[in-house]
Amino acid sequence: MIPGMTKTEETDESQASILCRSCGLCCSGHLFSWAKLRSNELTSARGLGLNVFGSEPSQRGFSQPCPLWKGECTVYTSPHYPHACGTYKCKLLKEVLDETIPLPNALIVIKQTKEIIAELEMFLPVSPNISFRERLVAHIEYLEDTAKQENADVDFQQRANELLTYYKNFFGVKDLVDKFGER
Ligand code: SF4
Picture 1 (cartoon, rainbow, N blue to C red):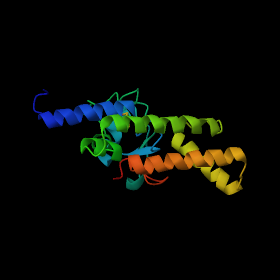
Picture 2: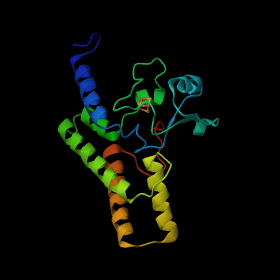
Picture 3: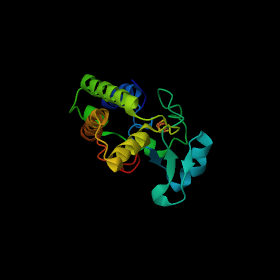
Picture 4: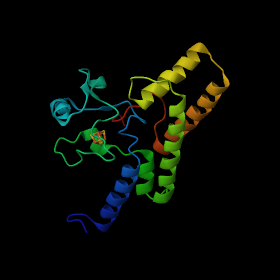
């Protein structure tokens, strides 16, 4: 048992660790394009190597994908670990922790979500932008603006709608402007 932790807390920690390591979508630029920082975190966040931006309180954060995500967070134990990272729990994680959904089922949801993302990647134009979410939004807006309705676009839109439904129903990310850290 981990010192200072109850058995329940230890089980929760273990389940969260398994789920988050198999996912990473909240760090990899798939669910969010940026995460919020507190004003007193800007300097330390730069020191960690995060891409910090913004002087306005409502637009102060670091961009995603996070350069510190390497299959797991590489600064998880740092004293400068961002507050938003430490407090954020997606809907899926909350539901695993309150036993609304069994961990194996949640892992299947993550696998399915990543499969949809991989399919969508094939539709997205080549871009220097490394944020999947921003590229997805840009392409959706492009198709809406140009009112293109080619077959490939219909397939893309169906898969994009499927992904956004997964984001909303399983991860609690309701629309294209949801921001990591604003909960
Ligand atoms: S600092 Fe860690 S938890 Fe926060 S976004 Fe980067 S990889 Fe994810």
